[in-house]
Length: 325
Image 1 (cartoon, one colour):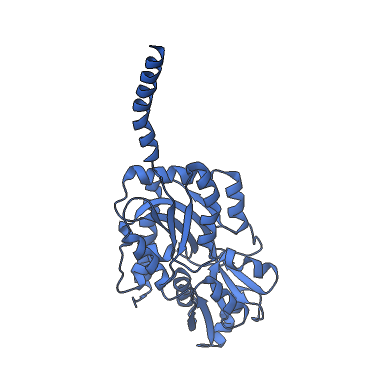
Image 2: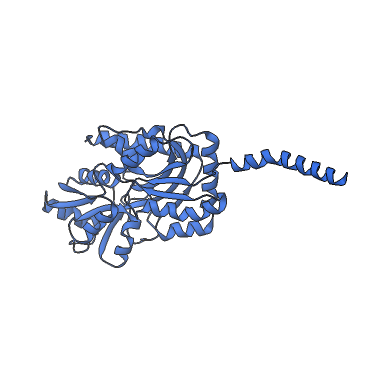
């Protein structure tokens, strides 16, 4: 009788526990998550995601797999995610261009940035005016004097046509009345190398990209695009300090978004996981080491930021007659 009771209890226990086990196995995420980097390998956005990967695995038991899909100023990667299933297993780690600038500078796109699902802000850093090391002078005013004395012979680099640093350099030319020539490169790394090799005179680049070369005195930095001076280069003034308009706040930010239609419970779970990682002092320190302010915040705050950035730069593009190509 005792043996029969034991078997019965064991059977009931297994029967009752089976649904709970099934529920745990089906909990999101139950497999690795692919994060698409729409830029070149080794860039700042990829580094930011890698910083989060270890902690994400510890929290969820699942990996963040980074896949690089560069091309068309991020449009290739953005389109891939836009068309992916809305199950939360394919996300986009996006800088400014795919989310804001592409729709202002390109005539046709194969995705709609406003329909991508906001997850969380990833990071932010200022753009800086990086100048080749042998450029005459030590100030932004010296660069402007040089450009006016050499109309059509002052060259600037960018990460590609229609990107944030391209837009920033165009605005700089319009504000200063200088005739500047654009040299697009396939990414921040090649553009910074072009600057170091003297192929271009300046490059409006993310601070983290140029910081090592600045510290080794291979190039100069004449101005910072943030609202305040950057802690890594406190000796460099902001554009605002130098008398430039309020709109001349030049930062490069990155966000994590997903395909249209991701269920709110999945996007909220992701937001909670990422925010927990951003609160980790070790994660914060690693972000600071690459010159990036760590992100975070709610999905609603991210949606509002994207709408605000799009509105601001749409007005800037209209006021400065920036045409779509």
